Length: 84
Length: 97
Length: 193
Image 1 (cartoon, each protein chain N blue to C red):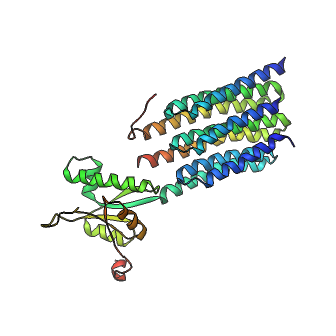
Image 2 (image 1 turned 180 degrees about the vertical axis):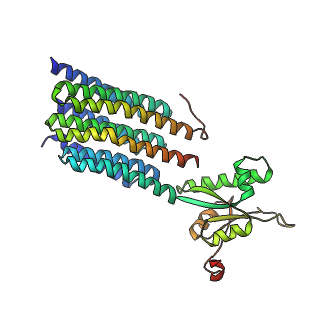
C-alpha cells in the first residue's frame, strides 16, 4: 500500500519536472525547483519509514532543513541579474 | 484504526500535492502559482509526514523536526521568491491575478 | 528489489538530459538544482545516505551558488560610455541625444539577449579614455558619436569593438553600425601605456 503511495508521489514529482523542462520564465523554473526539492525530501522520508531505516530519514530531514537556504541565495542572484 | 487514519492522512497529502502542482501547469501569473504551490506543498507535506508519524511513533523527534523545518523554510522561501520575482517583473509589466 | 526503485532511478537520466539540452545558462543553473534534488533522492533510495547528504549539501547548495556567481560575472558584454551620457541615462534625462542613446542601448540589449549576454555600462571620462579602455581590454565595445558633418546623412552612432564575433553579431543588425578595431595591429608601446 505504501508502495502505491510512493508511485503516486513519483507521478506528482513528474509534473514540476515537466514544468522545468518547458522553459518560459526563469521564476516558473524556480518554482518547479522548490516543488521538486520539497517533494523529493518527503519521498526520502517515506522510503525511510517504508524500510524502517533511520539513516535515510536523517538525510531527508537535513535536506529539508538546509537545502532551501541555497535556493534563497540563488533567487537573490537571479534577481540581481534581472535588474542590472 | 491508527493504520486507517495514517492512510487517510497520506491520501489527503497526495490530494494537496496534486492540486498544487496541477496549478503550476496553468498559464497564470507567477505569484498565483507561487501561492497555490506553497500552500499545497506545505500542507500536503505536513499531512504526509503526520501520516508517517502515526505509523512509526518511535521516530517522533525526527519527523517533528521535519515538520518544523518544512513550515519555517517553505514559508520563508515562498516569501523570498515572491519578493524577488515581483520586483523583477516591475519593468516587465504584466502582473495579473 | 521493488519496482519503485527502478522508476525513481529512471528519473535521474531524465533530469540529466534536461540539463544537458538546456541552452540558457540561467535555466540550466536552476535545472542543476532539480538534478541535485533528484540525485539525492536516488542515492538515498539506493541506500547511500552519506552520498545523498554530500550531493544535497555540496552538489546542490555550494556548486549552484558558485556556478551562479561564475555565470553572472562571465556572461556580460561591457560597453564603455562617456560619463556625461552615463549620468544622463541613469537620471532618465529627456533630451534628443539621450533618447537616441537609450534607443540604441535597448536595441543592443535585445540583440544580445539572444546570446544570453547582459549589457553592462562602464563610464569613462572622455573619448581618449574610452579608446584606451578598449585597447587595454577593459571593455568589449565602445561607442563614438561623430558630429553630423555636412554631406553625411547616415547614422552618427558608431560602435567600436575589438572582437571579431561581436562585430559579426552587431553587423547582422541593420540598426547598428559597428567598426572592428584590430588591437593587435596597433603599436605594442601604445598598448602598454
